[in-house]
Length: 204
Image (cartoon, rainbow, N blue to C red):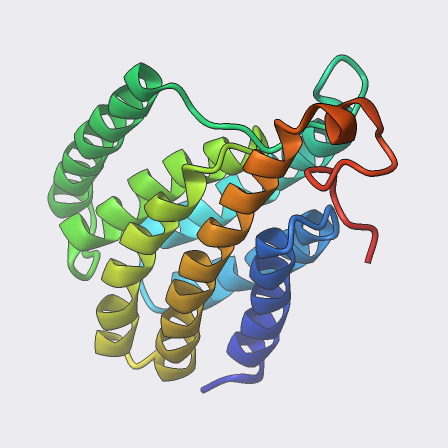
């Protein structure tokens, strides 16, 4: 367990907890944490995860802006993803996992290429949904964390594996919290009063 892995987990953990609380500070903590994780995974030959961390850094910058200004210059509310689009996201994630897994198996010495690629593909789906503040990002994170826990443990990344187990619990709790935020945002008086609307990001 290296100091780099410890630092990456501390910052990524803070980012994930802040996301669950609907706090805009999830984004800058995530940028730093994912940058550190890129080096951790590169050293462990988890190449899909390395690429994924670079993706997270870029999308965190975009997501930061989206949460603050993505609703016609105003903050995005917490909303549902329509069912048809949800099925499209599921299909896209599955196709991406298979295709990237084949590439990893053919051209790299990646450890467990298909599990690695599944983590990557559905993390991308979850991240894109989170950027738009869709409630359905959380069940996708549950799927990702369910695969990541044993995968990282098998590579000796025991702290990372343990924290991903904690992230699994956090995703479940956060899913329930965001459902309440979505329901509260549909209440007309709160929706019309930006000072009261609970779907806006926390400043702490």
